[in-house]
Length: 307
Image 1 (cartoon, rainbow, N blue to C red):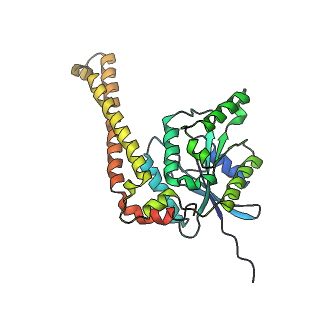
Image 2: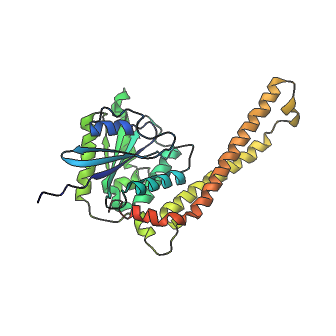
């Protein structure tokens, strides 16, 4: 009887827009036909799975939408990723083995979006899974003074209480990606090696959803998302109040002077945009608090994640 075919190595790739996720996938897989832009569909924002063999082992790289998407909240993105993985069958008998976080060094490392995304990932994984995470910095070929940036990255990695502090303490790996096939495959091999050596430990979200009668909003991840949404609602509400105080005179709406009419419609367009953003966050907060209907599917998915 022949040997059974090894199960695929499942690796999730996350990163901000422009971090180079699709390029990384093309390089790691050797798929030169995979064009940049062939990854995340801008309409559906569904994850995309690319299958190939590395060192004789089947590998699946899963490219995901970034948490910095200004058109959707983190709740929507998380739900879409979970639903897609369940639909594709990755939650049944094919656990995820690791995660690659791509960080472009030319982007602002202190941005609130980056901190928010990193905190969300930490709430999903829990400390036991950090050893199977690789933080790969990108865009090194665009630098003039590489040494200075290296020192800055190293300082940020070692900074207590910083963006990457929990990952570092949990034995995640920080490395450079040089935008070559050899570099991408080296990083992927590091994830595979870490997965092969790691203990079969549950991740945080799995442990929490396994408790009887707990709602998604009561998990560490749910509470984190609720906190972010509440913060957004407060900020936007205050902006609306300040914006209301700057309202132009009513007669500007139908004024014969173009400058005055432009001032009114500019103010009104800003008001409508702020109102739209406020209503979106309020809708997502309500949705988060009634997120119980997805618990079973989420449990099936997260019960296999890094397990």
